[in-house]
Amino acid sequence: MRNLALLVAPSAAALLALIACQDDPAGGGAEFSLDAGPIGFDASSPPTDATFPDAPAPDAAPDAPVVPAVSVTVLDAKGGGKAGVRIVFHDATGAVIDSKLTDAGGKAVHTGDTPAMASALLELPGRRRIVTWTGVEDGDDLRIRGDEADGALGDYLVTLPTLYEGAGMYRVAGPCGSVLAYGTGASLPLYEGCARAQNPVLVTARTFSGTTLAHAFKKGAPVSADAGTASVVVGGWTAPSTLTVSIAGLPPQISFDPTLLEISGGVGIDNPNASIDGSSVTFQTATGFSDAHQASISVGDSESFASRRTLTKRFAPAAAASLDYATLLPLVTDAAVDGSTPRRPVLSWQGSTVAADGGLVQVSFDGPDAADHEYEWTFVVPPGTNTVTAPAMPIEAEPFLPVDDAQAFIGIPRVLFVEADVLPSYAQFRAQYVAAFGDAELRSGYDLPAFLANGTYRTTGVFLVPL
Image (cartoon, rainbow, N blue to C red; front, side):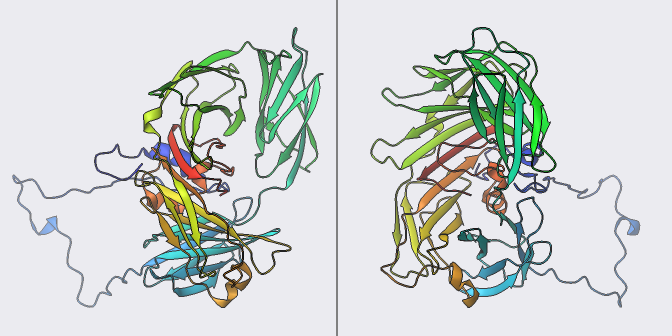
């Protein structure tokens, strides 16, 4: 949501639910408040000397001047600070004005003149990436996850107390995917990037033709303390409920892809059985399982298969919901790169982005150790942007930069712009953009993770942009 006076002011509770997970790898934020003290005085009681504070004594020390500061905090896979990460601060031309390593708390702070950009150089297993924030302002604390969260957490051994009469198979789903079972047991693998300390497990009894008959589930199942196998016994069978999602304003001959996440304990379980009838979609949902539902439609561009737009609503479990096709963001197309100056490529794209809260633009390239590493550069950019130029880097950044050869590979940019009615402005987007999409990676324009707060979310983009 753009921060315009005529728009509804952001809800502190909604914003906290979306972004206040800073103790998680997803990040967090502080509650907004407006504490206005009394102004003026009652005309019936004229001021006296006691109305105003005494002036300071002549020899009292003056308050220290406020020094502008911008910080970058790098988080490890478990949400703690990651030390020793190179952070570079740049002026508006992209020139380097400061370069330092994060401290034991994962933080690097620049004081003095406010930089226009800041970059983090992240060394990951088999992958080197630079993240550059643009449009930086005084007081920013920019946050990024600096580790891959993909370690194995063991697995769940899921047991069904009974088989369901008439069922031919069972879809057993957890935080990291699903498997099909034909008996009373199934194994679900767990990984750091998708599982939490406690997770839901949802079992769907289906006919061989795919008709949903019943559900059984377990909420808050703990993972094994030693990354081993944890036993999970689901509860009794319940008849499904029906959710109908209607799409208003859908033009004739326009196709769309619907998705639904059933969210429990912050984990979204995909519901794959959508029944489309014109401009409405019906899902059979698990009665009593969800804290929230998240319904989405994804629309591609008939002329540019790389461009997609999504419209998503997260809401309390209900029998009906609606999405308005007319509110989709404008299409983003024609992403391009000018690599004539390989160390400072210029990325561009077409389409209006002024309605977004912010954007992510990413490019892959050949680096100095391409045999053992993948290389990418991600830019966090303001709404209304259609181009970004990579800033200059210090000598310490050499292992992360494109090969200095105009003939070397630099890929087509992947572009994603986001608008959410629970995000107040680009300031919040750039500060904690990882948190805006939860713990999961946004891997494509229509494969969305479970959001953290009820609200409406819109994206428009070209290709895919991992966070």
